[in-house]
Amino acid sequence: MTRMAHRADASLNTRTVPVPLTPESPHAVVIGAGFGGLAAAIRLLVRGYRVTVVDRLDQPGGRARVFKQDGYTFDAGPTLITAPFLFDELWTLAGKHREDYVDVVPITPFYRIRFDDGAVFEYTGDAEAMRREIARFNPADVDGYTRFLEKSERIFEVGFTELGHVPFGSVKTMAEIVPAMMALESWRTVYGLVAKYIKDPRLRQVFSFHPLLVGGNPFSTTSIYTLIAFLERKWGVWYAMGGTGAMVQGMADLIEDLGGTLRFGETVEEITVEGGRATGVRLDSGEHLAADIVVSNADAAWTYKHLIRPEHRTTWTDAKLDRAKLSMSLFVWYFGTDRPYDDIAHHTILLGPRYRGLLQDIFQKHTLADDFSLYLHRPTATDASMAPEGHDCFYVLSPVPHLDSGDPWDEAQNERYRNAIEQYLERTVLPDLSKHVTASLTLNPKGFLNDYLSVKGAAFSFEPVLTQSAYFRPHNASEDVEHLYLVGAGTHPGAGMPGVLSSARVLDTVVPDPDQLVRVMQPSEGVVI
Image 1: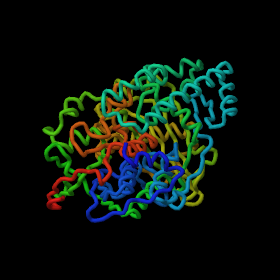
Image 2: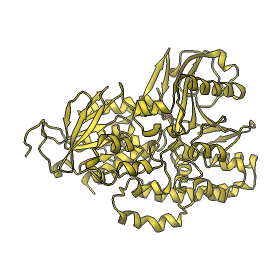
Image 3: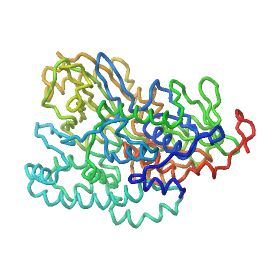
């Protein structure tokens, strides 16, 4: 473990002083300005690396970028913050205060869950309120819920507290945790573990939907992910005022305050490799950015398949990548209305008529179904600044198959699907919606491929099944290329804000301190001693 790893463990209570940068400080290039890339850049800067972040979009954030239209502000991707201490830690490491850059506020209920028959479950962090909600559906499940939450806490203590920031770079590391994982029943699926404690079919949906937030099917995702239930209970669900984009901008501002460089509108075409070691990146302009280390926050499958030449890959070959299971994709409709819908919560989940069958269509059959389950985000429930006065701002998200479905997602299909969602919302929770929409944008699986260079348009990279977790995911320190590191949804520990922030924290363990780094000659720098 490096000095920085020890320092990171204490960082919640100890404000640190970043290592001063000089022209001779080792240079790190970070590909992608998503949350993982931004967090990695901050951590590297604090440790004494010069850092350049390169992103093909015109703004920071990656999937968490921002769309603006007609006075509305739409967060494109993540909309809720859990484990907020992982953000606070970044500013603490830099010797600064997160509150000076962005304000976060708690949200309750965490989610309002609406079933297809119109019944509603208010999902909160209040233990007694949750018991009352469960009793309304099935009194016999109150005790089962208590035991499930106790199990979730035990899984959390191992899966998040002990292992979330540990690199799985060897079989030995993986073998050491097998007994604990077996004892925690990680061989079960999320739905299977929930069903062990909860009997009511609707409540089983309530407590098993969380894997969909990180790209997983509750019926195949390892039960390790039930730790999310306790994680939310422990730290709550939070919102950044000004939207998730405000947190992104705060991190970007921190990078610049620390002396880092952000370059937007530039696409990395290749990670250059010499003698098995990453030496920098080549941009679409032809420019080569020399680097002592390279960190990729690009889609992990894309990184190996398209940024590293085949002769430099022995582990993540094209054949292995083609066999990998990728997450589902998403259809997202961003819209504003010229009237408020004051009875809609900040986060609403609308469950459709099918649960298991719909998920089979999405994940196994790769078939776009006629029905759907939706996540409806209304930030104006908390933050009026996201829309013009007297208006409301929304996005609605529908899990859909990735591009193996064969759907063209051309303009006609895109509009048909958007219209079907609009009609459903109009029938259920947003009356007369079609008469009040004043702004409209969409993102579909083809957009995930074209905008984010995500293989097959998968929204969350590798699917979080047991055989693609921990050691079996692309490692944080590349198995194939020395001085190449990965952060983001496709590496350990996985997708979701806590996951990608934790992947950057893992770098404190696997990336050497600058004064321990054996540097090599870079073409644009000449000889480095």
